[in-house]
Length: 335
Image (cartoon, rainbow, N blue to C red; front, side, top):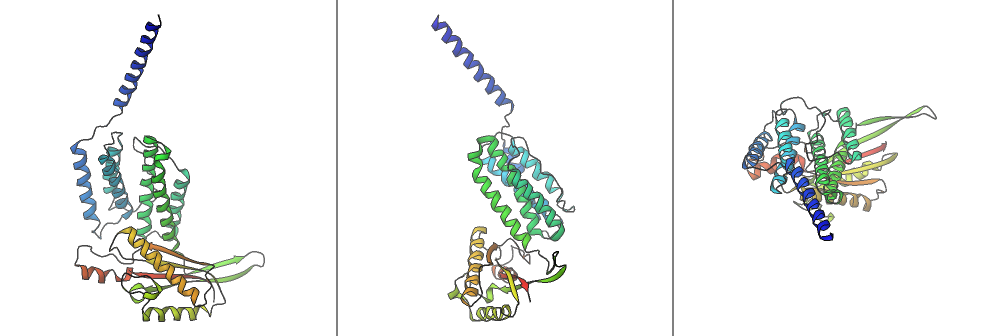
C-alpha cells in the first residue's frame, strides 16, 4: 500500500512540475538573430544621430540609447523573459520622437518581465522633471540624465522580477548614482540673484549668487590635479578670487564644480574632476577661506558648454573642447 501511495505522490509531483514548465514555456520569448540585428540597426541610428546638431529631443535620443543598452546586455545574457524585445520596441519608439519637442511629462512604461520598484526614486524623477522645466528646460545634460534614470529604474524592476531584490541591489546603486548626478547638474542652474524675504521683520535681503569660471588648462598642468601642479597663472587667478571673497560681508556657501571634456572614460573624468575640485577647496583653506560651508563636486563630462565633433583630429578635438575643461565656483552670500 505504501508503495502505491508513494508512486501516486511521485506521479502528482511530476504532473505539477510539468504544469509549471508548460506555464513557463507559455511566457518564453526565444531570442533570434533577427532580435540582435534589430538592436544593432537601431544602435547605428542612435550613433549617427548623436552627431546630428538638428536633433531637437536629446531626451528621446538618450532614452533610446538606454533602452538599447538593456536590450543588448539582456540578449547577451540569453534572457528569454521578453525584456529584450520590449526594450528594443521602446528604443524604436523613442527614435521616432528625436525630432519632436522634448516631452518630460512622458510616462515610462514597464515592458513584460519588469515590475515597478523604488517609488522613492520615481518620486525623484518626477521632481527632477518639474524643476528642470522651471529652471533648465534647454539643458541637454540634465534631460539625458533623467532619461537614463527612468530606464535604469525599469531595469531594476526586471532584475527584481527575475532574480529577487538581492540581485537587483547593484542596479539600484547605479540608479541612485544617476539621480545624484542629475541633482548636481540641476543645482548649477540656480539663478544669478535670489530675493529672500524674512517674514518676521518684513525686511528683504538681497542674496548674491555669483559664478566664477576658471579654465583648468590655466590652473593645472595637463592631466594633473594636485596643488603642486597648479601653474603660476592658476595661482594668480585663485589669489585674486580670494582677495575678492575677503570683501564680501558674509559667505553662506561655496560650491566648487569640477568639469572635464569627453576625452577619456566617464569614470576617469569624474574622478579627475572631483580631485581637482577638492584641490581648489584645499587651496582656499590654506589661504584663509573657511571651508565648513564649502562643497567640492566632480561633475566630469556631464555638463559641457560646447559640443564637438568627436570624429575630428585629436589636436582639433582637444582645442574644441577646451571650454569644457573648467572649474566653476558658485558663491552665495552678501556683498
